[in-house]
Length: 601
Image (cartoon, rainbow, N blue to C red; front, side, top):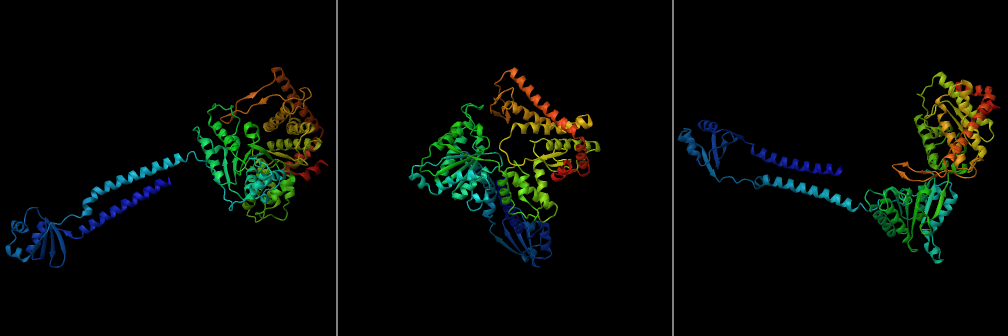
């Protein structure tokens, strides 16, 4: 688009210049008044003409008052004969000085201009078309070149100091940094540094940031590209781009190549719908060849990141390619506090801000989630025209990230508000009474996102494992709202639909994945094969009979019914406390942890 505008502007300027030249000559030609022969004869008879210059058929008439006029006569006829034909007296003709000059030769520029303009236009058009064709050829020639970007080492340099948590991952990657700085130290002793390192972790845990930190610590060139940038609709383009990328990297060695979301191109071969000629498989084959072609003297290390290691081709993970896997877990409470301190460096925090409390309120949050929490808090503070971010703004932003923003325009009717209050009170009461359920931190009937109300349960400490008792109690907590509606209103609403979906999923996983059902025994049921087409999973293999499927459904229903019975018993037993919680919710709309525990005491 920019080239089209530029070319149009050039043509417009050329046209304006030609028009200006024409107007200049036209103005020069029309600077004198042009008169008819009758008017000329009249002026001669009046003795007003002093001199006439004849050039061919053009007459330049000079009056005695100093004015100059133009006129024309017929070709091949003298001026004197013409005047006689007009019956001008001879003495009047003799009184006028008549000079006969050569016929004016036309200007060379004006002669060739009518031919020059079309030629210039055609030449300009051909030039414009050649430039367009040249641009297409250039793009065609660069089609097979990699789109890897070389990061600016000075402008956006990141080191391990800017990366909080993930201590074990840092230790693994420090070996890479040392090898890039002192490769001979490893080569002399016969050690081989891993050629490829695969960063594994959930979305938002900082895999890309960790790769940038490695390049920043080693202070080497850092080529970064996404896995999807290799794949095109034309077979062979991805492989060509891989070759070009590794060629550039070898010239810039020692350096780091970082391939983000490598699962886009590194999925298992032979499972796709395109056959062996599939473009993705061609690209993967080229990556495997290039990584295997490295020798110990080539100081190029390939880093790749993915959150789907289960779908990668086994050839990528064998020794000699991505032979080291670095797992970046979700941060624990201490790491979350460090991450919050890093993201809070350029934000003005009020004195009441306790980032340790914020870390306690955000279990399961990734580094990206925590950065988003502080960013949302800054936005809320700016909208309130405040100068410092306070604790309440941060706590509100946590709920905003988890559930969505408050929908103050979503006004419930008094009856709906009462049902929502008892529904959330049911969740909170069951969670408080059951010993293995997570403690209640907040209850609210203010709409957020799709939820008309919500209850926030947070664990006392970060957990990597979850026991059977915790699953059983969490299912009862999920049905606390369902039970409260049934006990107090004797009628159910759609408010429990999401709770029912979650409890069914938990119960099915207990039976089919975790081996926690005594009747089904310690085994798994069903094997999901990742085979994606147009974004949908199209195959799941069942390794059990129809009779077993009926038994699975029976056990899932048994878990759900058991959880419902537990919730119904607790809600019926503590009706007075349920009413207390609901009354406070209807009055204040929100109950924090301390106030809730005081109500339950």
